[in-house]
Length: 236
Length: 236
Image (cartoon, rainbow over the protein chains, first blue to last red):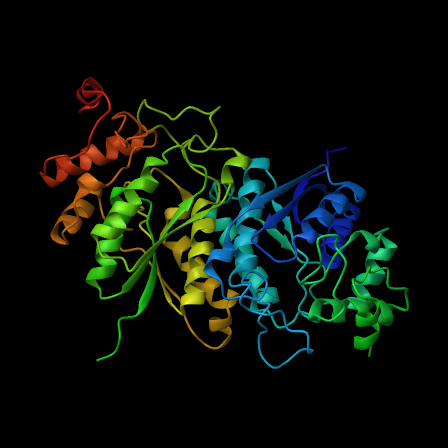
């Protein structure tokens, strides 16, 4: 019997990436979890990532720091730009972080090459995806092609797989998948502006999508909200 | 008359990237210079980058920090791996940093998107290139394609150009080009293990290529070597 293959799993500490890690474990990968601290407001996610990596059996969890915040341009990294709380509008929202998934996948690729891993796993989603360009299937395919050209392993003929198992799932389907794989969503933090303890605002797009997902899946929402009334006010 | 277009120019502080910046200025770009501190041994390059950015008229110079060093796997970031000083061997050398150019271009792309720039400039070279996979034309083309798919601007129909003006030039040609554009190579540091003052070892691959380049161009080598004899010992 051959040893399990290593995979690098991007793990933000949110609902989607926790599900992704559980999926990768279920597929038999030896999971090396990687969280990226890119100056995001919701640093509570990184605390959650550590809990999730442990709970879901990652063999290792690392945090890579990179100061995307210095470039600005996103409500998630620039304190001058407010996180929208009035529901989704047209176009790409202000929570889009320029080139975020490219930076995160590049770092995952760096670690994968050192580990000898050929599999990267990322929890992007093109359905309830908030309109981010770097969550689309054609983007994921282009990164896999780049990875082959970028690396020593690729020169030696290896292919890289970029797995995005959630890409075509609704939030409710993601939650059903994760529950079936034993994910405890109480450990995860999705809110774009969670407080230091990880309590959610209940009002940003990420909170809205998350709550609607639990409702759609017919499951109780284990999210801890900072202000009980806020949760009530924004319920559909 | 239209305003000059902005470009993000990756600037290590070495000979190649200084030439690249001079090229971009000569092409009329408003140059935003970006240095990446990825935990490399040759931090003296970053000091040189600041000098070079100023001398060659960049409108701005930033340093982005990212800890690639934690992944290891390269003589440039892992103190346990020695920098080779016995001349080029077969295959990809230990100075290869996994996914380095992908990480650097991803960060350049992040800044470009915030600036509204559609042009990235990188000083990779596929001739005297030390055998790195991410210095090949097909890699550069794949990144340009990825950039289009990764970004808000790409969704809106923009194309990104990844300029690699040195890719097909010999080191001697690069030096001739830069001298013609007014580059003062005494400001640059190429050595993989320069000391804190930027003095070069004279023995690593980068030093060997650089010295051979000045010889090939028929120009005096302005490099400051840490040990005068070391320079003599390795001269062809």
